[in-house]
Image (cartoon, rainbow, N blue to C red; front, top):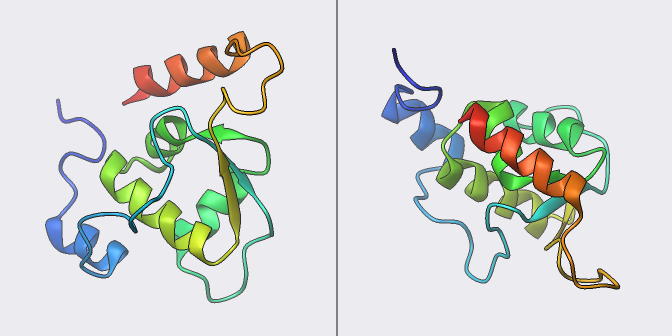
Length: 118
């Protein structure tokens, strides 16, 4: 049985990223980085970008986005770097801005669910 995102045609993934194999330098995306949409999808926007904006109405971990989109993490990070550069999403690590410095159990559970879906 094949895993989601593993059997995607290489030309489709190449097209999604415009031929790029890495996100923009200095992008803050690790598995648990939370992504929040700053705007609604715009007409004519790439369908994957629009899907990310819809999924990120509430803070959503990068790993969860990759699972929902059924795309490899590397491709998801590239798409996120596009949206971040355009100011359409905001990214924050769950440890930053947390008063106690501890990770929120709900966030950890969401990440676990996302990892299980990979």
